Length: 335
Image 1 (tube, one colour):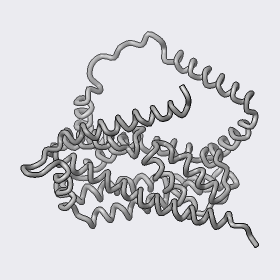
Image 2 (cartoon, one colour):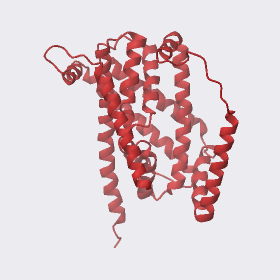
Image 3 (cartoon, one colour):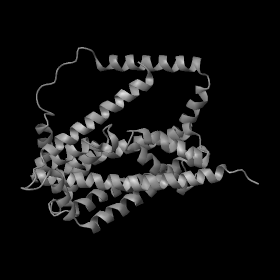
């Protein structure tokens, strides 16, 4: 099967799955007499506190600036001095692409930075991988904290999903055998590729340089502080939106932490901007854990996700336009 056709089919399956999850979520939204489901969502929007929603936007952009600075810190030890402005523009372009192509933003922001700062893509991508590793570890910490705070409720929630119940089926093949097989296949592919394309060695060297940048930073403590700050601001975004609605305002701190963890897991799904997975997992958590009426939970989540998405789209489009102007200006021949 041609690579382009395979990519198209994968994207088509992803879109179908996203639409199916959205449809499944909307099924539980009961509209009042004389109104449809979207009228119900619009009614919830009209009743929301726009001040809290605007506060969420402000917090979101502060977190983006902080993430851009953290990325810049990773790039500096590689010998690529990047301006905060260009780092921020590239980051926002990446967020915009991620809304259409899951995980495509990681590559696109590296290419945008290449155009703005001449930073090699393989080096900047290595630093992006470091960022993702740090984010995964941070997510694990958040999930652990949510379990500590709401242990009984979260265990009940997992059991309602069919997780943790029943007996595990014994594996016929040891896990180490699978790992060894995958390792041999990966090594074979790498060796074959290097023999056919010797230039890959320089690409791998650049990627390794970016990957090891975290160990070469002068101020690792500041990097850690930025990482904690970014995830605290993500939590604060969830708090602002939850405070914006009468139906969720009384849930309390522990509920915000739990819903933030569920939302982070849903957003990690390989779907455009977490669309579908977010609209399925988070309302279920609100209903099962905190007995929120299903219609209110679904309306809340649709507005929450739409507001976040519009914030990213606006920032991404503006950043893309500014990047285009800067790149065209730099490409003009000097007299």
